[in-house]
Image (cartoon, rainbow, N blue to C red; front, side, top):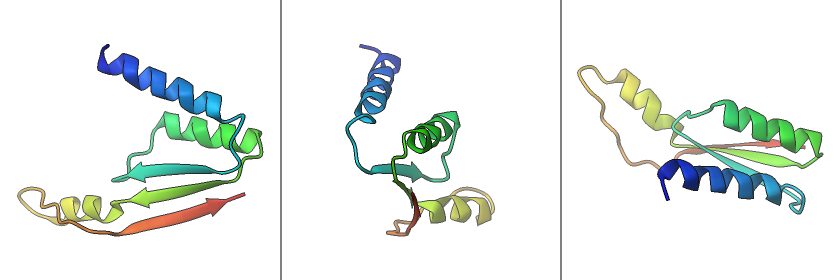
Amino acid sequence: MTQGNSVQKRVERTVRSLDIIDLALLLVTENSWEDYEDDLVSKFRNQDIPFIIIHNKSDLVSQQMGSAGGSSKKRSNTFRIFCYG
């Protein structure tokens, strides 16, 4: 199975699970937000599913951008939580 197939299967399982969940947790790492996350949030809202966005490692991106001459990732337990619904 290729990596693309396994990702697609995970996406399909995620979408199928929307019919049975009471609360959605959406984990975003290092400011990675794309169309997939937008689609999930739209699905949550359309189905009246309350959701929490957990923004993990947001500090790593700012550290990388602030360091001249290369990236320096430091371990951190920083995360931000946004609740909707």
